[in-house]
Image (cartoon, rainbow, N blue to C red; front, side, top):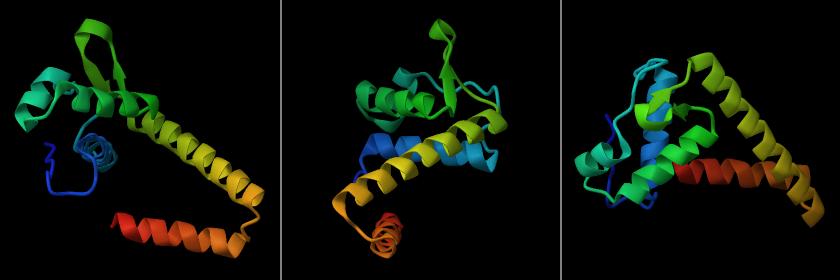
Length: 122
């Protein structure tokens, strides 16, 4: 399911977060599907439990998964998770616009910064 590249400049928890979120968007993880426990995934990936736990917490914060106590963590329905992710993206964009305006950065320069940052992620 998830592959973590130890040589990647991207932190392992972020690789897990992106991998699960991408699998949900692609439909590879269905709504209601139970994820491996934090401990089980950490063992499978040979990572610290806290690393996987951080990824799960961020996925839950972003509305991609939900944790149901001792029952485990489950994928939220695609529409609900897509709406939550869209809302988080809108909030992040709004925060960015506010901050660059405070710094006096022109809109065209701000867009160039975003494009450059997106290219660096690829």
